Amino acid sequence: MKNYFNEYNSAQDSISLKKQTIIKNHISHYPVLEELLGFQYYLNRKFTEFFNSLQDPTDLKKFQAELFVYLLFFYNTQSLQTAFNALECDTIHQSAVNIRTVYESIPKMYYISLFPEEVGKITVHEYICDLSYEEALKELKGEDCMTCLDGQELKFETKNDFYNFKREYAPNAFRSKLYTKQHKILLQNLYSKFSNSTHPNITRNNTSVIYDSANTDLFFEFLKSLSYFNIESYLEGSLELLRKIGLDQEIVTFLNRISHEIKTIYEDVYFFPDKDNLKRKLKTSPTPSKK
Image (cartoon, rainbow, N blue to C red; front, side, top):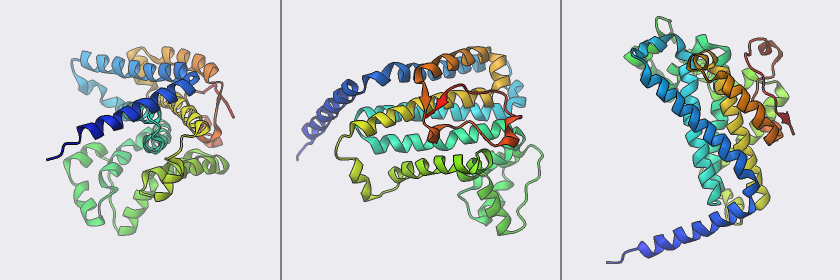
């Protein structure tokens, strides 16, 4: 019976050579990106230490929306690290798959910051968005949804009500509610390109066979920009909780310093809400300039 350990080892050697090439050709991105990732790990560790120090975790019940934002921040950190690892191996589509997740998540974090009273419905949406109408009606009566709604009433009299609810809290809806038309188009165009990497399209082969230094450089820029906004949206969406932990000013100081090192952020990964009616509700303000 054949074994294929040698084939596996050969593939790993090839990946190792690719990684050496990526590091050598794109080393200028590493100091800022590694510091951004390191700061995100630091913030996650500080939250864990704070949570473990609580005698009664239910004391955080009033921070429901802020805890939701923290969890998205935590998952985003994992996705950004995985995207970085994939980019180092020159598997750019696998990097894009994880970037797409963060790309969806950050507007959701900003939306929850602006409308924390809707976090229960947003959570319920996660439970039922992939269900049929009949299944959703049953799920709404379950313990998980009832807990999320905390006394709020959510009914779907018709299938149309249900489908409208699914659209109301879909990723595209968050972008529509937060950004001006022109800004949303920029975000949407890049999101569509990331989505192409997620689906089983054979056209991916056009950008997956030959190493492209310029394209890889661009992805490093995306990772830095997304890391910046993952931290900024966490600050915006969990400000009171971060004050309780004692991290709010440290985050502000870090973001102000790191923005000068990033210098410019591509407009199609600039996630700060720009609709006039929302600006007065925002608690924070980013400083990086746009390309």
